[in-house]
Image (tube, rainbow, N blue to C red; front, side, top):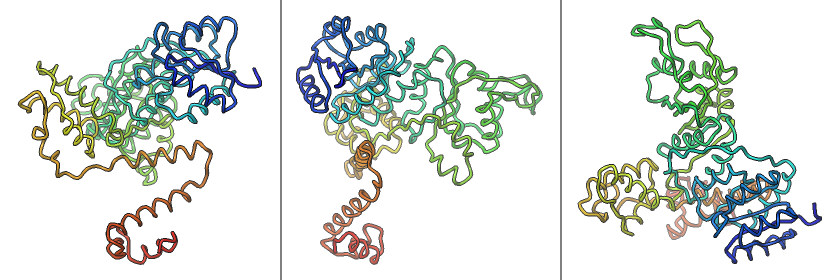
Length: 464
């Protein structure tokens, strides 16, 4: 390996080549730039870099074809794939073709440099990725937001494994959709995908649903019945709303996860399952563990890999493409022309809090497709709760805070709360005092503090 690590930059966009070339040279890399994949395939016959970073969509041979050729010839060479087309299909294609990592545009240059260094560190350990016959059964997983790009990366990584997964997210964020994508792009994609909603089944019937029963096991059991664990053999069992599982059934589930064995209700024959488990919850399982309403050992068994889905209000850039998709689907179901959204409607939708998340948006699109008299949807076609007098949702400050904290973690900082906590309180105080024109008692009431607490905070933050 050269004293200076070498990277080849492949992109038909001259501005991207120039920016990356300068940034990587400044970071100590030896760079070579290409405006097409064909030249790379010719040069790789005689020499190899330490890392390649390539765009996906280029004239002639595209980035995925280049990746496949490189993976066949030099499978240990790490390749980072860039793309401005940030969808799940591109992410999966990149990982399944052997990409080391997937980098959506626009990207932070420091992030790109850090990613190249990680690729260099693992150069000698990189193994060729298994090629899957990926089947996208759901094309409606849309996500241009950074938080959704992180989800796509995890799904891509999981396409190479069969480990247990825990999906967390609010109601309506698409947990079953993501679970299906993980299954259909995994080594078990030829097996069944069996889903069960724990919260929707009465507790007295749930055991039979999961584990099956023998004839005569209880009143009404007229024949033997296979449970969901048997139905999912060789595939994936999706346990939705796992936080609602009764504590006694949690014990039985833990045994299955431990040794793969179970008994049907009323049965004496020990059965074995090899179903992969994907669980999902909209609850705080950590809090339920602390409250002793969820077994800690089961939580750790399920939480081998966690996927956290962002709420719709934190991914406003996805609202318009999702709405257009749902309007198109509703129009096809009803056999009518798709409705159109004007800018004022899109503005209102972007400012909503969306407690029901993506599912709520989908239901709205179905409703206006049926009820709106014209093809163009206006504000008057929206339900009453979408009126302009409804308070707007917070403009994504949680996501901005998450991004700031993530950057500090990436830089190796410690004691982050000691820095951010006072800054957060300072902004609260200054904004409240400005709003109340300096009236401390009113500011304290607005913030939900006592007058003494506000006075103490002002002194601590040197704002008095």
